[in-house]
Length: 337
Ligand code: NAD
Ligand code: WQD
Image (cartoon, rainbow, N blue to C red; front, side):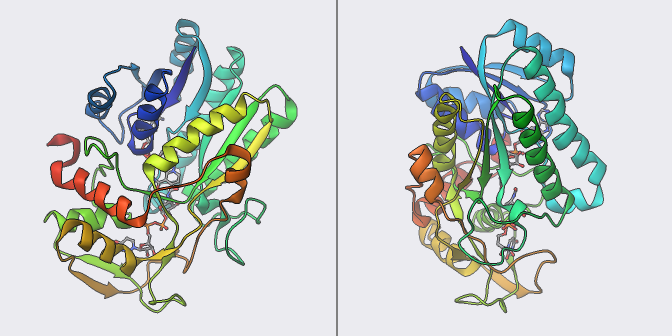
């Protein structure tokens, strides 16, 4: 039996596949390489000494999914494939709804047809919008503020209806907080296509000399140093959470939802400082206006995942900065180098 991983050539996908292979799982990957390259999967093989069955194609292609599901014996699906740039989603909402929402519907239809009914879905803390209190628990009200977030919330609702309609589905909705860092080997990591939208890859590119300076979006928030606070989680911790979620699905829980975060909030300036320590470089930055849509503080209540999945994050902020620096400094141009 194999685990089918959509979007497996991407950032979180590759790290999760390493964990799956090291746990002796067979892995089948589908990725259209719209935001990744096949080189990432070659690196996975370098780390593990194992290979995956790779299909370059799209989750919107139902014939291809049918073909994969008849060729391979699949026990469960981990569904990472999706577009994730918040700003782009505001400019091109239909692209996001088609890819993320319609894509998931087509995937689930093909799964149902093949009688594969265990799925782990990549959701996001963005579904909590601006929380009324902290830390954020899974039962907090949801509400997204941009089409990307809406697409995640819509999929959550679709999966809930699916589980209600047919109790033989087992679905783990994982709400990631802010994934950062890289595998300790330095062989795989986050490789943004263009100018990074997210903080850590931007800092890493400044440290390696690809960008002149970081813009810090606002220092007048109600936080310990005025800059935004987030729950940064090491991608390897996150990857391990997926294996625990797969184990949970084997107990036939129906639909379950978990925060994957550390429960600890760090500010933008905290992250800069950690990166300066790890890289032994100064990170030049300037304070600029707040980024529209940003919230002041966001961090998880991680207890539910600890109790029910026996999972908790173990990597520190220094581990996040060091691994990110190792990846960026050994691959200044990402997988192209
Ligand atoms: P990523 O872009 O590195 O990986 C996503 C992969 O999916 C890419 O390799 C891309 O080529 C592929 N893909 C996209 N659309 C596809 C399609 N229609 N068919 C086949 N492949 C397709 O992103 P990531 O950071 O690894 O994120 C993985 C998932 O986790 C996404 O669904 C994302 O929305 C979600 N998520 C990410 C974060 C984050 O900050 N990185 C936070 C919360 C949730
Ligand atoms: C973190 C902090 C910024 C860049 C986004 C998505 C969310 C999820 C994770 C997918 C904030 C500040 C950032 C920069 C800065 N993705 N910042 N200068 O906004 O918490 O979440 O990624 O699901 O949906 O919205 O992450 O890394 O962009 O920002 O000062 O150049 O860093 O203001 O306080 P965010 P981020």
